[in-house]
Length: 206
Image 1 (cartoon, helix red, strand yellow):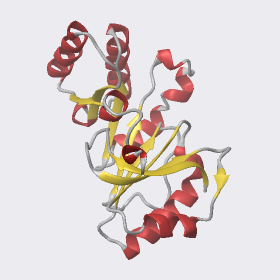
Image 2: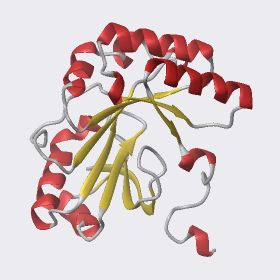
Image 3: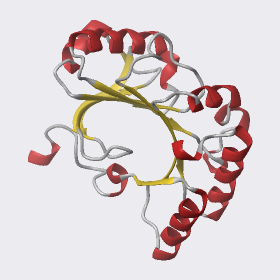
Image 4: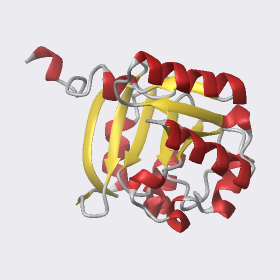
């Protein structure tokens, strides 16, 4: 697996405050053997795998790691943060894997064709252990989010509107009203807002 960073912290998105081992993937990162990573994670209750690019570019290694760890520690939980560009392989029937699909918006400066791949998003929409995350900043984001959800046919019960930066009271009220009106879930990204510089193993004690 090509890895940029690993660290111990607490979850700050979706499920808040869970003790976990974090793995940040990067196609230009350091190549590490799956067996070596397995030794690092096996005694942790929760593993978070994420990256700036699509994590399932490394889907075979991810599947190998998850299947091996789940066999030895059946209580281990994997939170996978994907951009919904590629489907996983060999792990779709595992109950201990959560798919957090981040749907990027126009202001990400990524083409619509890349960030909204309808076939793949519809596949995740039918998975029992998936949610869709939309990071919202303004009314334009809300309007675009509503259109994507409608066009792709995403289940509203799977949609979570997330805030990962500080907002005015008026902005927050606007977003919450939209969630209430449409039946979306609401989430605050605690990790980015409240402890962006703290949380990696050892940082708190320095």
